[in-house]
Length: 403
Image (tube, rainbow, N blue to C red; front, side, top):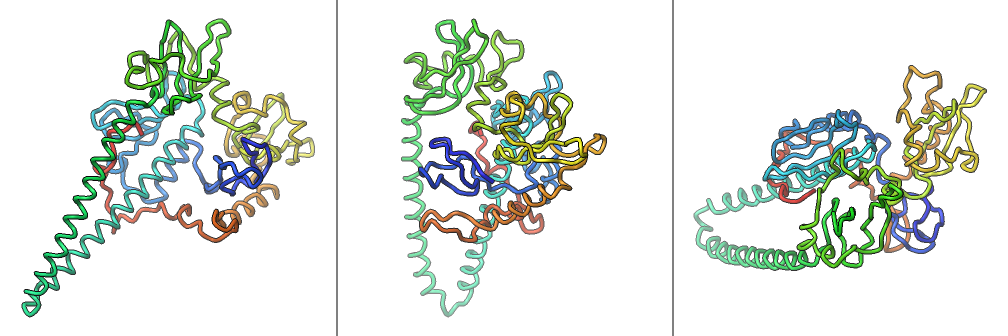
């Protein structure tokens, strides 16, 4: 499938790491599987299919507003219909990763964090098993009295090397912490809503002092507007900016609207032509978008009783941009209660599946600009959990950070 380069505007395959025309990084590189979840129920099914331990063990609560410490989660707020992705830190405070009406976006945020945690847990298991095997080998060798004295001398040297190694690691860790501390002094404001000189602003997240992550709420127009830099010197550093923060997430009933649901937020979040895949109903017609990032993959359920390709230029304007199209989006997968046929039964979808399968068999090699078969780390089977040989240690997770 094709994507459009954010910098030069050329089209290229979404499996490439960078644009072949200008070299810009492909921020939308496709490395997902066809069964990537787009709803909370999909994510639950994916979780169960991988044989993962219970939520209480992994600390990932899907579809649950869990209020205890040490937890990642996602749920739909019954009060306003928003989807909330959160992390409860070890001190019990909550950091909201996302809050808005885009379920697919919210699910993907937790999905990517869950996959990261699985990989990290597997790595810890390997390290633990390697250390245990090494300890057993050393003990077995030391049990032979004939070799006791030379082995003991050898082990003294080994222990000195080990102690020196850990001393160096501790030194590096301390220096890294010191560097992070001093860097944090110059870090710009954290994500959230700010009141400065009686005006409301929103910061998209951490950046440097030349960031373009600030937006301003225009009371006259009722819209959020992008501004080039922080509105004042006090907001250029987090140390002083925190005195002006109103909230890290949207508070229902505020004098200003939720930035995450604004048109500007969608413009910053999605590339031109992005509209999530699924079924749409517009002015009595049914449409299907096959690929979120491909503007040429729209289909119309015609009078012939079958799906037919529809040119992007002929597509209703309201379906060309995610902010407008979401109002006409009604289901990500086919529902048998509708009067239309299942798009996945068409030859268009089957051809798409074959292309997607072929793309997962290759990866782009930056060194020789050639393809090689090394997609293993992105294979969905890598995230399967073996409860018989692996153990999940949620205590080793960084529960002090926001995400």
